[in-house]
Length: 303
Image (cartoon, rainbow, N blue to C red; front, side, top):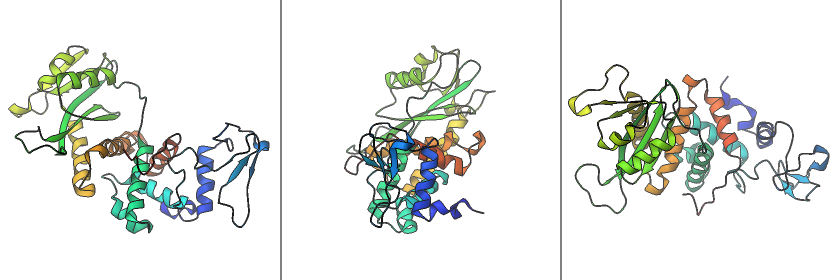
């Protein structure tokens, strides 16, 4: 049976019950004062009362499970939010706002903003450094789209730069940077990779200085058509970039530069919670729902 047949995707009351069980495994917690005493929290019921509405008798405030999450203040039924979250987290190359708009029966404007809120839930912060003793981390950059307000030039000067780090068999981390300079690249690598790691890069000059700070630094010379030499290669990142570009060009087609970091968070999230690491579609969606807590994104400040 498909997971999309679950009651919480089709009934709003069931959606609230499901999300409450996921975010409040020990019972409701007031987001206003932190009260978790079940005796001091009551559920408000009535013909005109909103589904899932509760009252904290410690601070006298009303709340629901959506308060303090990216779903707060949304008038879209919660079951449609759960559908959108599942579709966006389970589609390898993304799920367009136009498709969400048609499938969920909401306006395109609402679908677009829903997608951005879900990407905010996918965003991961305060992560530990990649790699470690005996582990290999690849570093590389790619270029996608045209920088806003920049005249076409030869090479990559007019394109948006995306730098990525990936721990083989582990997680990926991407960054939208203005230019792949020695200083910019070096800081990202040092801040996000443990010094005990083996660093694999191409022959880019921006990696020469920072490479000396690691246990080992191997270089593959793509200009000489060298793509692997033993365990020295950046093919893991090339595979990631392939999926990212196919999604951006084939599914999303257009992305304003100030929104690029959200799309990067989306593709990072799906890669970091992939099946190879024991995370199926349902578990990935649950991770995104858990990530919705403590974040807020308003329509006029989507970036």
